Image 1 (cartoon, helix red, strand yellow):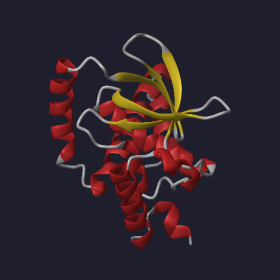
Image 2 (tube, helix red, strand yellow):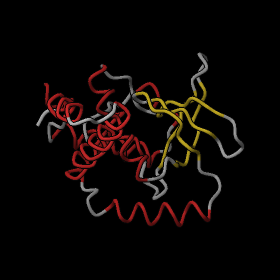
Image 3 (cartoon, helix red, strand yellow):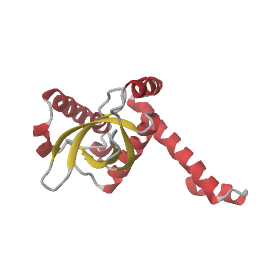
Image 4 (cartoon, helix red, strand yellow):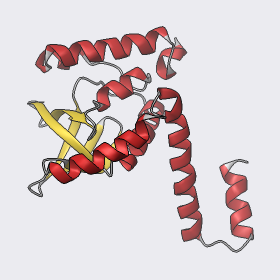
Length: 187
């Protein structure tokens, strides 16, 4: 059943717009989780939930994600300040892929309670803050997006990254290219 048919059916059965929005949020969340299952997170989600709860209680240095837009996150730091950060090492993609990446990030952050660890790598001359962003279980968000073919490396930004992170990101992108994942499937 399409979203449109579901919407019409719910409205004709007396469902309010607010209830419809709640249903659609749940549908989108389920869709995002279903999208993540092939990633291999099927067994990782329960572990992520457990690790998130134990890490959050023992570490107060997590940032809370307020908004997501492609490869940009608005986060609230532990001290209460708000920052706009760009995921370091990733280039800006066309809107379709930004939307897909935002959906995956939303699902991952829903599971982690919106908490991430942020390591600022550099600030650019135009005021952008580039950062490595990890989920509470230590998984680098950039690696997930690259391995799913929902991001591309921006080679101009890679000089400020630690060698082990750089290697991990390059391997993730290479694997996505070889498997023709998402944006790499278009070529």
